[in-house]
Length: 206
Image 1: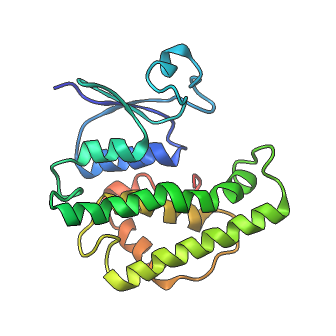
Image 2: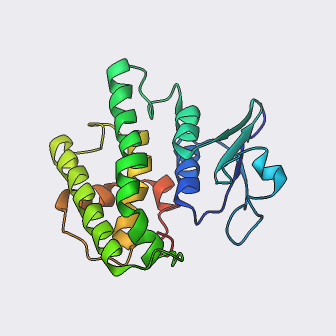
Image 3: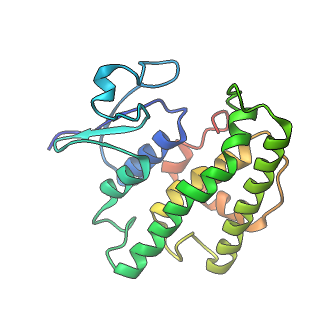
């Protein structure tokens, strides 16, 4: 069995999802820097692996995969991070899909304007609306954590906590006005106790 290789820079939250998953599973891997400041994802060699020109890409003996949440599912299949039971797995994937759609949509404009300084994302009204939507979405997650009292899918740590734990990290370390959500604060403190999370929750890289 070949050691999998991850293509992508560690400043990407989507790359860090995959790396955290690999570390939680204690799997050996290699990594190459691709993306902003490194090898261009517009390179034909990269586009042949992911036509979207986005990181991460996973390469193993079966070929290539892209889309961070899909890669995480692939790696975690057959492990406690992704339960085999139909209902239990659906709950984990429900929250993973929510992260990729509703939550990411909420923060996108604010993060692009305030952190990435992306041209075209500097309108104050749109940034303010994005911050408000971001806080509302995080309030929904806080309510879920109040209900479970532990992790996103219930009592056990799962893939849902990997993708959403890094989302909480981004929210806490971005230069925005945040609503105080106590359950999120306690949840983040629990995640920080995990060595695999501590390695990828870099304060200087939201």
